[in-house]
Image (cartoon, rainbow, N blue to C red; front, side):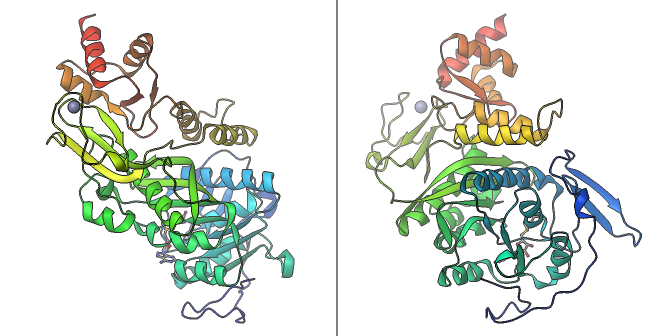
Length: 434
Ligand SMILES: C[S@@+](CC[C@H](N)C(=O)[O-])C[C@H]1O[C@@H](n2cnc3c(N)ncnc32)[C@H](O)[C@@H]1O
Ligand SMILES: [Zn+2]
């Protein structure tokens, strides 16, 4: 079992640690996951800013903290709580805890048995301790939390070497750094455990730094119209590849893009078994001439052909990968999250929250008949040389033609559909004439 240590340069479990006596920011009885509002800020008498998220009060000090990430934290807490309900246990490692808000929420809302809150920056220590001290720390087998300050790889590797495995690991990193932590995280995660990873690298997903994405995730990414979905797929693909090295595979339970940042977050489940042929790990090809996309398997590289042209490898074909080409979410899992959010009063009863909208969109876009990517209505309009059709109108026209269509949580003026671009163009023209 790890204990809190104050010196980031050493990792000796025998060091005991300074535990300052700090006043709690709010009485424990006032903490409740049933309190719906996400963000509020109040000033305490020393003019310090105290944040409130889901009814929990906390200080952010000088740490990196974004209000906009509250929905990402909600999703993590729902997933962690579902895990605890099913498995009965929840040992969690918050590898980049910042001010410790996630750790606090995992303890209070997901009822985690133990949370190790780690952040490489030891100047965050006071604030993390103060925030977590709202939950009784406990001791021995009943210890609920500890705080450390190590590089995430170091703490993850240490836990692996100690055979101190976790049920849930949260890695809230910057840029495309997460790829750097995959391997050590997988080794310290229990089988069937969950890992929640983040990327904020919008340049790579946009295809503007192909060699950077190649270095980070092993994927050469070129500009494509559904770049932000590519960002999620590259992140999952990188995890798939790293897991495979260790003889594991990962499956995405949900994938979440938010334009604040931008932020790409995925929750993955780890299981035994390497990559095999049909593991949805391959290439995606977009044709700039006709606007259609297709998934390409490894054995078809060099033979890529679009129905709009006779040429293989025509200049109009843009290929990215290898990346994840399979489903972004498990629809049953999202339904479970939605039900739990409903029980907690986070959605429903007129709450009308972003979270509710998001989870419902995720359910819609999980239809297994829908391919990867999305079609921006502006692209349809520009190819059809008409005004952009209203989203609901074109979706219902597409459905009337027997295709599947849904909105995308990633892009508001876009649709996910199995309707080919040529047919979308025809429909847009017909709508324009009405
Ligand atoms: C995005 S912030 C975390 C925000 C926090 N999880 C939240 O929800 O408010 C990333 C944090 O990672 C820490 N960090 C950066 N590199 C790290 C590393 N290699 N190991 C551990 N922590 C690191 C930073 O000090 C920073 O506090
Ligand atoms: Zn084409």
